[in-house]
Image 1: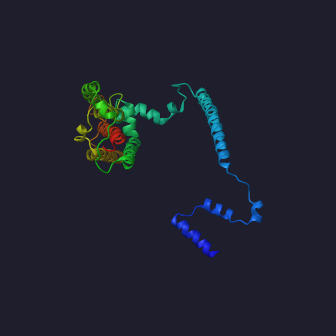
Image 2: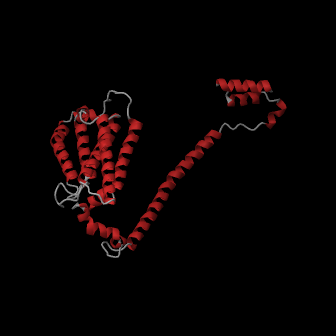
Image 3: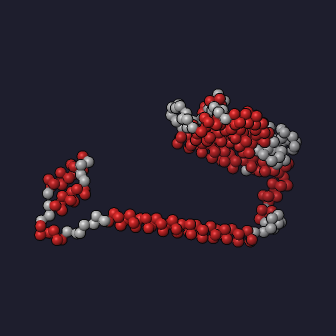
Length: 303
């Protein structure tokens, strides 16, 4: 018995042990008087299992749409009920309009931040560290995509639809005309963020879209002289580092009543609102580089 067990283990280790074959051999070696005790042939069991699996799959496909429909109707009904119970828009009794934080933003936001656009004053002054966290989230997401998709060596780009697009005269001429206007418009949105609608996120998205359009219409190698992996790291790390250092400096000086060179200035002027203008610039750089970085990594596996 011990020798048989050792033989089985040796065959198992060498990969030559087949359990089904051993069972068949044992059945053939069974004594004639024990043949009546053997179970009947169950070779049709696989067919039964396949039929059962198909029936379960059909039932699942039928029940899932019904369940999802009921679930969506329940969620929609709950949301409609919540909307009917909400106070009227602009009502003075709402929590948003009755809180001292909201009154501070509206009444003192212009004088304290210098930003005509009170939204920019909130996200880049009162709640600047929240925006810093959002910018770091974009940077962390890009790093995660790099870990998954960045190629270790320079490989020849495969023939794809991108090469067909680069031979499209309509696309190339459209990009040649529109990309400069998009870049200027994106810069305007960033620089005008403290004076009107706009800011680093929206302006950075416009600039990132312009870079993607140019890279699609022309070869990405034309952009590599300006924006490659090394310059991307330098720009993003410098922008996030400046944001962190500037707001830490501003909060430290404000909390201790110290003088600072970043004052509110004259509201309505381009050089006003303290740190909001340079912070918008830093956020715009991070957003534009992140958008183009995602596009480049997903299409070519490198920036």
